[in-house]
Image (tube, rainbow, N blue to C red):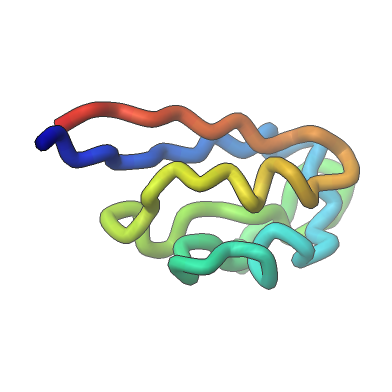
Length: 74
């Protein structure tokens, strides 16, 4: 049986750091970066990429649609 691994790409310049994706992630993969984008917002990033299962809960709750989720068979 193939194992599925997820990967998340965040559009850093569109992200306003609302934290909804961090709260929605069941695997606790996301966190807000200590760095800021050009608009001054702390953007979301993958702090634990190995735990991502590709459920896309983060992308569903993102109000600015700046998260893209990819699934890879291992």
